[in-house]
Image (cartoon, rainbow, N blue to C red; front, side, top):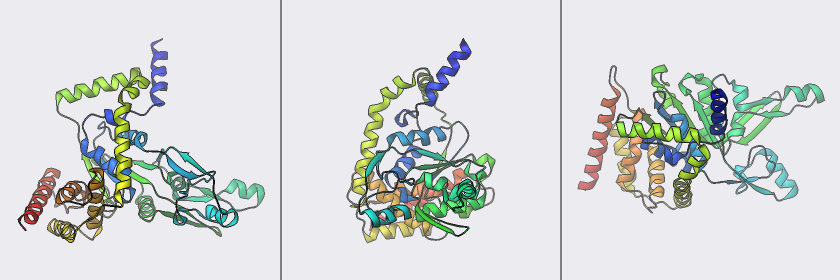
Length: 360
């Protein structure tokens, strides 16, 4: 009987995602996820932390906050009907022929990339079964097609083959996937919120790949006894009655959804001054990051933070808040240097840069 009850609980909880608002602590991780939901062009987020720190829970909870999206009906890529540049080759051909589309609304979902995936499984390939049966070459979409306008989640991204990570990050940066196989050439949109999680104890990503992630956060277990007790209580409540628990937190999640939607509308209106651009450039020079990705991601993230705060202009406080998410994984790390030393070093540079600007 106890066995049956256990399986019943597992069945019920599997139908519900843990509410985003009910996650205790881990504020920086939650902020990074929300910023990517507002503005996927930030470049995704890498969440680094030990097992059992709510990384996967937060990713799966995020999708519950995201508003429905408009898609072209029957399109396997969920093309966005708002512009020609967002369409796959099939929808473009249909538009040229019929001149209009039927539109439907869909919920976003989490698409997971398994560790054992091949490049063909990721980008798509020739449908061999169809070719053998009918003698016609047709394209079989891959994970990138399924991920378009969804969340693409890569758990243990540090254990993924480097070549696959390169392909994945290229698609995320360009927003398009082009596949050429056996005489077939297919292009389709591949715009998604990229989220990678990893445990640093199992090895790190190469610096070149780390730099491709827009944001990075480090998560740790919570040491405060009261919060640990709260985590246990909420987890048990969710397992015992997931429907009631989700209902209890539904208002808080709805508030976050409204904040995300308002920020998305505000995003294109955010202005910035030359001083802000100089502040960003000075900060990147001071912490000695390589290349210019850091500057661009800093600007985009600060812009998104301003939108989240319903501001009209980027301030130095927005830049400071963005820097904590954008620069940490880009700092050059000296041999045997502890992560906390990197953190202190970055905070000093941010404070110094902010003081310089306020003195002008």
